[in-house]
Image (cartoon, rainbow, N blue to C red; front, side, top):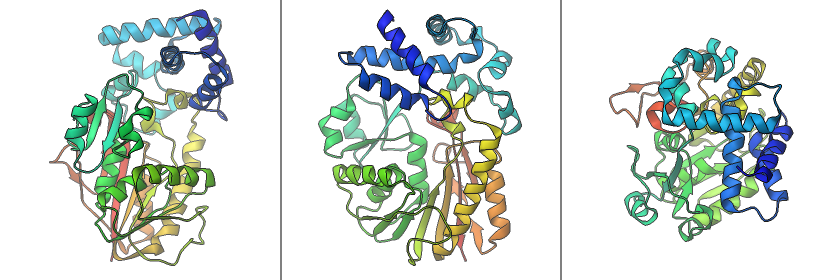
Amino acid sequence: MNPIAEQIASRVIARAGRRVPADAALRIELKSCRGLSRADSARIAHAVFDYYRWRGWLDPEQPVPEQIRRTTELAAAFKARPDLISDEELIQRAVPSWIEREMELKTGWIRLIQSEPTLWLRAKRGRGRALARELDATCASPLSDALRYDGEKDLFRHPGFHSGDFEIQDVASQAVGLLCDPQPGENWWDACAGEGGKTLHLSDLMENRGLIRASDRAGWRLKRLKLRAARAKCFNYRLMPWDGGVRLPTRTRFDGVLIDAPCSGVGTWQRNPHARWTTTPDDVLELKGIQQRLLSHVAPAVKTGGRLIYAVCTLTRTETSDVSDDFESRFPEFRPLTLTNPFARGNRAAHLWLWPEQTGGSGMFIAAWTKS
């Protein structure tokens, strides 16, 4: 890496913290630097994220540029010979110590999160194989329209992206939409829609028929959702701001409600290694309370015979089984639904943990109920 790129990466690391995630700090720095090539920008991004993947091996007394050079060496060595680092050392250094109290530390997971994440695309329904040929991508998942992309094209400039032929969406997130199984003509609520990745997927599965209400507490996210929906030619949705409180934004009773709840994001630690070192056990407990309240508040909006799906991109017990067990104890009218793991067809359960080493994407937890 040239000295200028090294300096920019160092500034990103200095700017990042609990209030400013590393990816946000990276965007700010790259936006302020004119004349950078796309290749230089990519190298800076790799250096920043490798720094957080390998932070447990670094000497904090060294200047940051020297630490960056060390992480580059570590990442290259691990890619060439992953067996050079033992499972015990990875558990000690790659993740914070508190996480061992919250989840089973599978060595396959820890080894995976030390590598570069896979870029996943979601093709329009039924277009997966054709798009794979067009982009030279790989249908590397049981999900027929999920594509792994290993190329170097700027996909945001690709005509297919602008015409709505595909979205950039993690394969585990795509699994959530499929497990919702929305039908054309149904009435759904994506209660924590964010910028709309799952809203667009639900719409595609519903063939643009029926209606999806999409809500979020942040108005700027809903504005981005609207732009994405226009590009994707998604028309069967309505936006409605909601702060997550007990007062619901509509009196409608839905065939299905999806709660893709705010969470600690432990399942995303491969593509977001900075979060390993900023997330705390107190954050996990606070988020559990938010998740419990969201489920309680949306429960009345599910019609009799309707479905409620709870999804979080984390693997902590506190935010997964603890939340679902608590909900079932307080709302006995909701009967657990048996879900089929789309990555392991023989695996059927009321609660699904999607592990990154099995899916190639982020870690997810999904639970589903029907209202009697």
